[in-house]
Image (cartoon, rainbow, N blue to C red; front, top):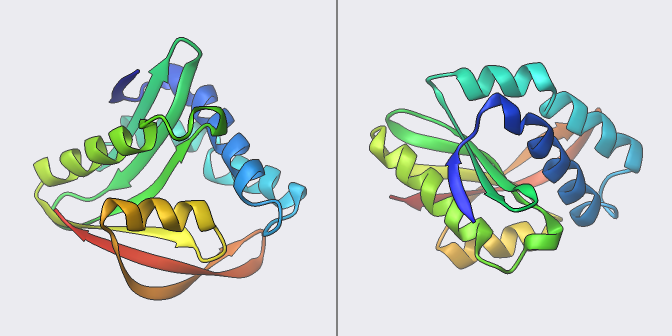
Length: 161
């Protein structure tokens, strides 16, 4: 497994990991239609290409023989960085992929001057919440996010770098 900065050739791989992750982790939370629409909105090719090319974002991928198997997307240059997304293909979970991505993206944020990192997870996403808690993130506050026009509770976690 290799963890590196994403390039435009990784876009379809990132989109596939996002879709498979949402389908696995959210079927009781979100409808299939909402998952498809949200993946298209949040991970559209133009949007991903912009973020990959941006100096303000860190988009990292974990890749193996099968291509992209996970990705992390964060923003921040000083103070508190924000981990927007971290997903591992369901077929590659429990193999250290998420940990390697999280360590790499936290390192990139720290190198950019961040002293803390926030991560948001849907409250109902049990695997996501367990992952961040297991890495030492502390629940900081509750928030709300909108997906497909509906409001969902989320937990905002913080980790001091």
